[in-house]
Length: 440
Image 1: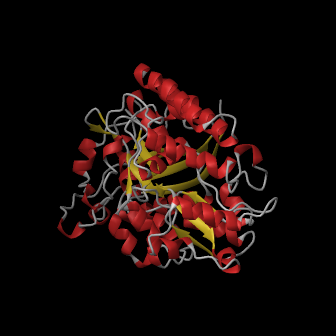
Image 2: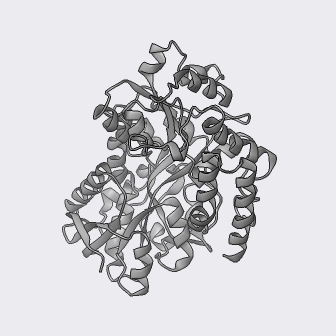
Image 3: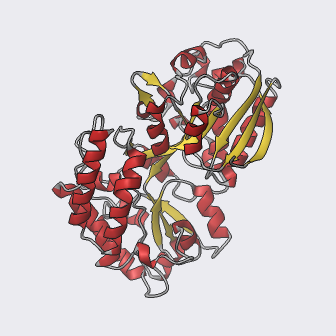
């Protein structure tokens, strides 16, 4: 049996009238249901989240405690996660609720794990109008809403070492972006000036399968023949191939980014590499708190956030983040639903905002003082909102995790190492990926 370590036990409450009103940013006109009568313990599983996330859930639990002490929530760090959820569900003993990242949540949609949320959305008066566009649709499967967002993100955004730009008398990415000059070409030129052999790389880009999609869009390409109902992969189409070639070139032609084979202990994690001065720029998702903590714990330099360099069609991102669902058929379903709708409400999202662990799902919350004046906020925090406005969901397929594990990852690694050409990598992804889609 897999060992599970309880990180916190907080009593949580049924969602009372005041909290339910907060489920919509237009709460002044939203009908208020009566207090919840739910009770019992909610077992909530997660894995791979940092201390800031755990603290956020702890505070959410505390804020609910004051409303209804009849519900308790046990937040558990769970080994073998998230596959363990499916195994536990098959054995009749899943958690009441759990939190996983986007592509895993998509892969779970057809497995019968999730409790449909449509009726609960009505009874909880949940109003999606205040959410960022594109948040509800990815988790709607066969006409049923199965999952909600616990925390939202956009990828890529760029983090850069302000001091290095000053020392080298270079215009910053934000300065170039304001002049419409922050392009792929400008990024390579800048990275070349900031790269020092055996000491520092000028640029690193996240190349997970989902993180690559916006780079394709920036060049007018696409990863699939359809975003809504994909039937084949299209990485070899000219615009998509050119975007992949650029990723290969910054590593093997311009040598401004490390190849996977060149990653060392200091560079294995891009955030750590940035914090210890081994990377001048890198692209990732939005988590300004984690960047700030890492930098303060290492080299202690001034840093900022910028949009990614724009391709011919502009700069784009994809919507990602952490999802939350309720397991199907649980005895404590009502209590678990109270927990879920608290987490996804503006009241719960205050904890995301204060810690800046991603982006609040509610667009209006980015205008609050808690968001703008958070201690970990970089000078150019407005980039987060700008990029959310330029972001969209990745292709709607439940095979993302399979595609990543069996198709994309090995081909991308070989391409970035220079072991195969971008054309060969894309051809392999298209071939095996299309067969995978057909068999799903």
